Length: 171
Length: 198
Image (cartoon, rainbow over all chains, first blue to last red; front, side, top):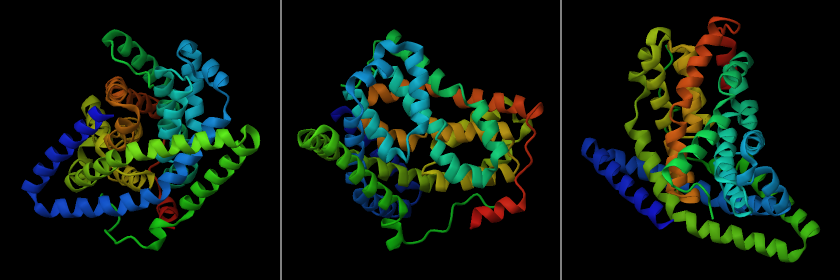
C-alpha cells in the first residue's frame, strides 16, 4: 500500500511538472476536475464499499475457494471471466469486490480474469452505452473478437507471476 | 466531420452529484446489508461494515492522487491528431496506436464511447476501433492508477498490465479478419447519432 502510494505520488508530480511547463492553466483545470470528481466519488464510495463488503459476506468462503481459488486452474479462470462480466456498475464496485474475494480465498490469476472479464464483457456497459451508441452488430463483433481476452489475461499473468516470482496473490 | 473533443466543459450541477447511480449505490448497500443481517446475523454485518471502513480509509489518499493524474492526462491528450492514422490500411502499427490511445483515454463509458463513435466516423477501421475499446477497458491507465494500484498493489497491477498489453492488438486483428468475412459492419448512420444525443 505504501509502495503504491509512493509510485503514484512520484508519477503525479512528474506529470504535473511536465503539464505546468506546457501550460500552467492545465494544473488548475486538472485540480478542478479532481475536486469535482473527488467530491462525487466521496459521496458514492462509502455506499459502494458497504455494498461490496456485504455482497462478499453473502457468498460462502468455501464456494469462492472451490470456484475461484488458486488451484482451480483454467476452469476457475473461465468461471471468473464470466462472473466478472456479470458484475454490475463501474470500478467503484468491482475493484472492492475483487479485494474482498481475494481475502476470502480467490486466486491471483482468477482475480485478473475476473477484472478483465468485468472490463471486456461488461454486460451492464453493453446494455447502457455500447449497444445504443455503436449498434448491436458492432457489439456482437467486439464480443467475438475479444472473447478470448479475459482468459488469456488470467493464464498469461499466472505464468508471468510464476516465472518472475512476483506475487499476484492479494492478502 | 465530428469533433473528437469531449462534451463542452461545464460546471457540475446538483445532478452531477446525486443521480440514478447514487440511488443505485444506496439501494444496493441497503439491500445487501439487510440480507447480511437477516442471513448471517448482526456480527457478520458489523464485520462487513468494519471491512468497508478500513478499505475506505486506506484508499482515499490514493484515489485523490490518481484522480489528479487522470485530470492531468485529460488536459494533455489530443485524440483529434491521431484519428486519420487509424484507417483500414494502417496495419499492425495502426492497431498498436489505437491500443496506446485507448490505454490513455481517461473516464468512464459516457466519456469513452462518444470518442469511439467519433473515431469510427472519422475513418478509423473496425479493427482499430475494437483495439481502442479493448485497450481502454482492459489496460486503461487511469483505471489502473485510480483503482488497481491502490486496491490490489503494484505487483498485481504491473503483471496484469504487462501480460494484457498485446491482447487489445490481437482482438483488433481478429475483428479485422471477421469484418472481411462474415461480419460486415456499416458505419453508424445518422439515426444512431441521433439516438446518442438523446
